[in-house]
Length: 314
Image (cartoon, rainbow, N blue to C red; front, side, top):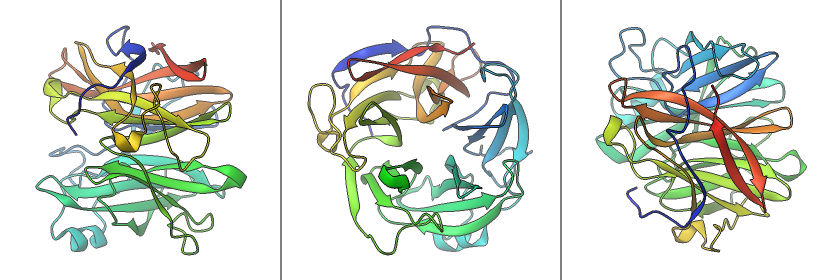
């Protein structure tokens, strides 16, 4: 996880503007626009008396820019699904890194479960709902292959669906079954698309797929070192090359976003769209608020085929 910085592109420090407003304590955010409102999903927080199971937590704003008015909607569930406890051998203190998508008119919320004391065992699961605010029905295991934390689901050619995940074991991708939202049973290809990144998320623009990921370390407040890198490919399954032509499987990745106090570290990102506009949501650690995890959002534009991060929304 602790890797040297890659070649710099249009590098943006996280501390370059004011913050969003409202309840913005989101870690590993995933954002979706539904109707006139935005909904954000966050990793659950340990030892939260209002969320004792450490469930994924949902937030909402109806501000047209998603910059103000964030409020907490609630927790996805009140107790951790029993299959997770059984597979991990104990109850995890929290559920990680959600990814929200619409598949066949239904909301699919992907998530990861693991234990800090064991970085070799993890499970990816999914819950579904017909309304963005639930109730959510857990659908069980998606995969337990290659430490599948930080799931991200994206559309590929011909309306295909792919899920990527990644951390210490590398970043992998697998085709999903459009009918079930789980791994395809007819195409078992497993593509490695990067090494040394977490929180993969993919954005499509102008004939390229752009793979964003986090390098450095998370989850240590102001001692965190997260920063965000990118590579691109003409195929959703890769290879993803950075601006210097280095494959992300070989450690490549062009740095596009870093942290600077008081917005320390910048990672755990998620790409989403508002109409034709593209955005990158991520968290930083607020040095002015005891290192608390905090949501930030930037519009993404493109110059000469590479992403450019705008100023944070405010």
